[in-house]
Image 1 (spheres, helix red, strand yellow):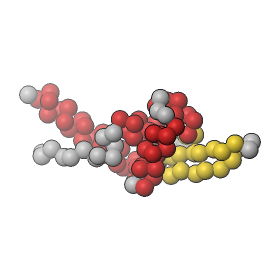
Image 2: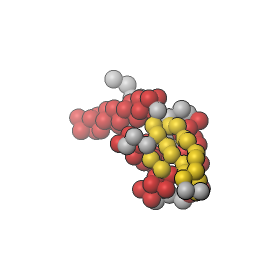
Image 3: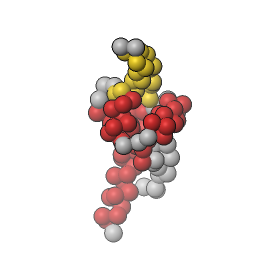
Image 4: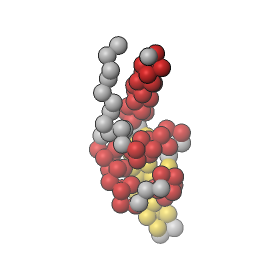
Length: 99
């Protein structure tokens, strides 16, 4: 089986961390993602926007107790991309162990 190119969108450490977290929860608040990934607010915002533009996540902005709240959740397209990425990584690892 030929080597597949890894999804460049998910091959970023922060974007992969975001999607990995969102796979395991129904939705996550911006502050939770920021704390879990140890990212700056600015960098997290940029990476979330890239994932949203690719259709991998949905972002819903609202207010809670007069404070802005940003909720993120993975889409079916994002879930499929993540599953494919994991399988491709496993394929790479299997090649390494066969040598």
